[in-house]
Image 1 (cartoon, rainbow, N blue to C red):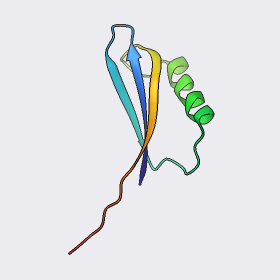
Image 2: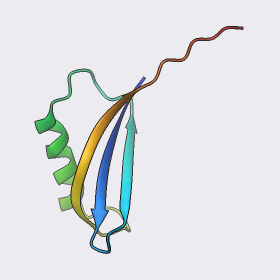
Image 3: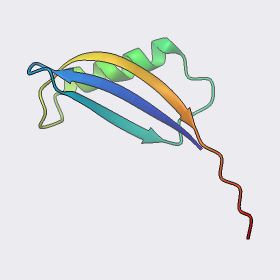
Image 4: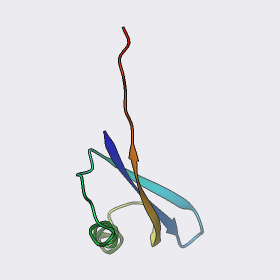
Length: 66
């Protein structure tokens, strides 16, 4: 499973991470930047996000053994 983690900073200097599970394969930097800007412009969170500070895709593999 791939998770997209988008990191934001508030005007007070606090950092927040928004995680979205099941990120699609082949996401580009431009697509992620656009999504992050939409979150900033939409002002949909209680925390006053001021700026996007980074993003990463985390892959996790689980292997059942029993």
